[in-house]
Length: 406
Image (cartoon, rainbow, N blue to C red):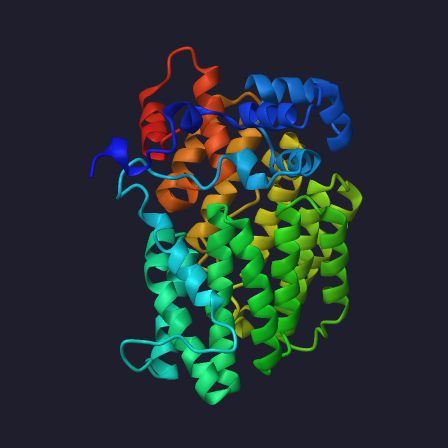
């Protein structure tokens, strides 16, 4: 199979489009002027003009606002899913159809070729899958996830055991995370509904607020910031902080509220939520941290989120200042989290016109989690913009562009 016939419906011009060009296309399909779109998205016309020309990179908040105004999925503006041009480059997407099928079984069990593995065996497999998630190894996660989803579906249909429902909820959450990262927002919506059901049957008091968190994160991606923020605040108000795990859940809700508020442009609320989360992280004795839900609710992650809040608010100076106090060497931070921080700081340095530092942070991000960078919209926008501002593209950037296919 050649690179030319692997994905014949995707032309070279479509692959090489930047987000601004896709915004212009969506705007024109809605018969909107730049001024009209700016009014609907609550931004300036000059910003729309700069983004459409490619002289200004898009932000997640702008993508969401424009997508809502043009009645399209934000993934369409981002150009997601980022498909490869050959079988190897496209392998990360191969699991999506199988995940869709596995999630479609409701009230009926799939017919397996052999009996499902035991709950102990499936729990051990989920530990492996969670490690893939923590390292942003999307292709490896996707390759194993459909079978686990189907086997756990059989287990809950046959036993209705709370433990089986808890494990199924965990597998579903992994599917939702993968779907959102690859730009399959419709699939992420299906996952939210499935996790809502499994959480109710799992006999775990912390799963319902975490389902709310997943729902809010999807709404944040879609630009419904006010609704998402209200949902998170309500969920956080119902969490008793009487043990380390409940405090982890409480703090994680407030970290997400901080990012949501920042994308909505509510600076005061964003920093209030971040302060609440930081205090919660400080209250947890390191010896008591178990992190059963993979939330990484610790001071290091709280510091990283502080930089992210500043970046989402467009305050690159504050982000760079806060970054000086961030320590990425702690064992409490996984590669996905570290890489995401490096992407955020690359964005901040790009806005500060320090292109060398921006490139260095992007290379750091790729070293930590290559697939994270390959499939992250902000990473792709940053690398594309770095290519635009250099008269002569330095070899490290050219190599990075090649690996990311941008």
